[in-house]
Length: 485
Image (cartoon, rainbow, N blue to C red; front, side, top):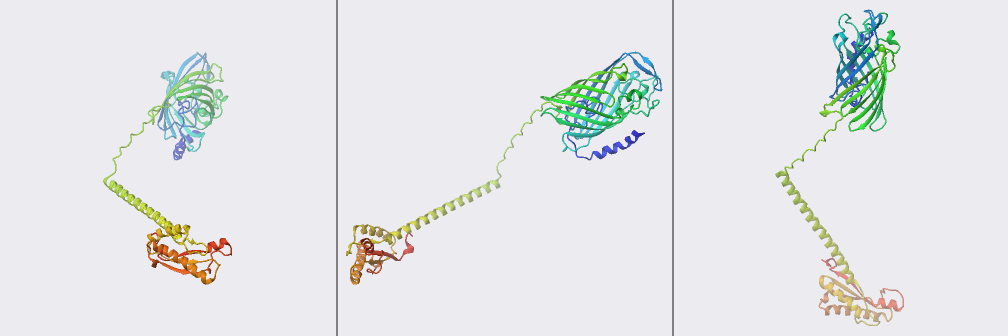
């Protein structure tokens, strides 16, 4: 029929999606890992457990009704039976793989064989979206559950029901209905996570499935509440700190409305729930059921309970430095020698440059001293006291630079005849040479020339101009490049 085609194509679909980039791993605080893996109470969510996270979950609820419905082998009601009380237990084992796949096994036990025996099952779910998609998950999955066996005189082909009660309306081919098949329950589901705070969020889940989600929708006693396989639920997840989380949830599994509360305590989960909230009749399928849930989650990579604090990894001990090798030591020594040589060369170069600058400064100062003029009184050739101090400064420079020779140029002001001024200017130059010779300098180092009044330094016929024109100028004629060397 319609689901047999699904059973053939479903493994191919799973294999195709295994090639997709791994999705973000589900927080293990997501409530429930019971019938379909990670889920609410009786519906799956779209996320999966992280890699190598293992959960073991127990769920039990009580059924207590005043009367039961009894049916013949064709599912036709025979009348009301006696009261019915029972504690129904479910258990599951789940593991997350590669942050994408979730696999598990489940056992639904209904006491002895005569009271339903065990229904064994397995489930798997594959997350489809890549890790880059945040806040939303999409998955496909399936659950298989074996048929119950109630022993003689009941048939062996009843389909899995919800509460472990021998109901011939759940036979493979019920009278007046389509083929009933709830062994295999394939589904597709999406879950959106909406953050409220850093530690709390709301999850919204919506999905469609066959099998247990839709089988029986055409039966009179099921069709009133059937959605045709659509299921959904919501949960509020409140972070309490230190690995604890409170989960409040409500769901509709395609037939029933359920609600529950769970709390995580560092990898251990406990909770309570109510099933069939909208029912108030005394039928097994139309009555409220109350139960409890307990689960433990073990995180393989952390080697401990999920949510427990992990001891900080101690820092690695500092590596012992073996020290440099002989080759490295020699290279370091050579580098040190080269650096010392470079520093010494730089120091010497700096000293030489400083000495050269000082020499040039001293040479310029010596040239200024040698070239400074001396002045004379009117109609006089005698050395004045101020001129003597200037000449004495020249003596020191001339003694330090014996190759230097000077030309002594005598000048006079405009008063007097040209012949007189020539003679007066010459006498002034000779007086300067005599001064040098008297202090031990060789006369050959000095030449004398007279310009008389022909080359005035200052134009004008004032006392100030005449005072500047009565002078002897000094011109270096040899040894100028040797000054200061």
